[in-house]
Length: 436
Ligand code: ATP
Ligand code: MG
Image (tube, rainbow, N blue to C red; front, side):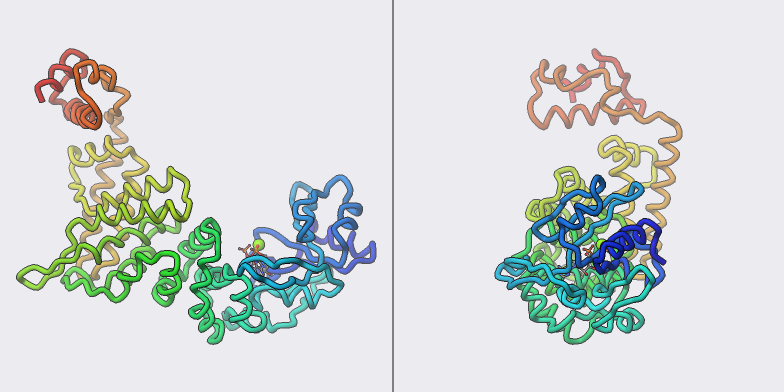
């Protein structure tokens, strides 16, 4: 099952007298008949032995943890010396690591039984913690005592939920209890790591189930979701409470990080905007704007790149606005947002609509029509952008406009030109803008 390059590395180590194995995620994936995306190797050889043995194709990438990257035939493999972790005081990384001579010791430090198996050159699997059985049962179980293991490194809590989502696995009872009990320790984990795990989790097949089951864990770093849990919308269009609706909307979206994050955050403004009308129907006027502001704060805390953060904020701010399936209406939004953001907005609106109530699923038809109009407009190549306009911001400043009025005037002029009610000539445009 092992690729030839991995076998080459293992046999070279063995020939030099060092035990060596493929380990962790790659063994898990091979056993469940999925092609691994990378192969990690664990060995009795010390980093200096590995560097000497693979002289010229070895890079010391993480010597303090015993890791050397070996290049073979254009591929890279992380070769790490058998290790036992010292005590943990910061709930994330061991204070020290000791190199070891024992595979058994190395496997004991790994997080889950399904990730704690090794395979040698001949395909023999070393499984001291029942990983194979758990893999067959579809179970995530900590190696050793779950509370101890999550206490050592709190990131394992989120890794557990991530694997549950991506693999569609259940979480064994004691491990699941420890996930809940230890969740506050996630406060010790760097925002980037939380974001990365959460992104993988959101894009997993099992995201719906995991989101529905563990909101309190997510609430340790996204406290904004807690008021949504169990929040009755009191509205005929909604079958679910706000959090259930959110989870269904995430699951309805394509498995693309930006879209799934947007849907996760899209309704966080609801609890803060709730009103009930005389007929007893619940409403959430303004939740799109409030939600966009909450999302902006969250993406800043979780250190999203600026471009993604702004796009998420925009999509949430716009998610309630109707887009009529007419050339005029779609054309306007197209000119404001550009094609990419508009397509994303249509997906966000579709995912949102499909997670409300099955009786109102027809609403997504409206969005399909809008998308068809968009395709038609783009095919006609009649769409203008601000760059095609015969005036720019400087021209408008020259006639006395300032600040946001400039952008508004440019967009209004662009709409008028695109819709054929104004000619695209400088004089005419300035005149029209001055008399607006
Ligand atoms: P993926 O498919 O996402 O790469 P993986 O299991 O290979 O999954 P990695 O983060 O690449 O995950 O880690 C490789 C291996 O290292 C794991 O299979 C596990 O044995 C071990 N490991 C990784 N992170 C931890 C951790 N925080 N605590 C304990 N063991 C860990
Ligand atoms: Mg891996």
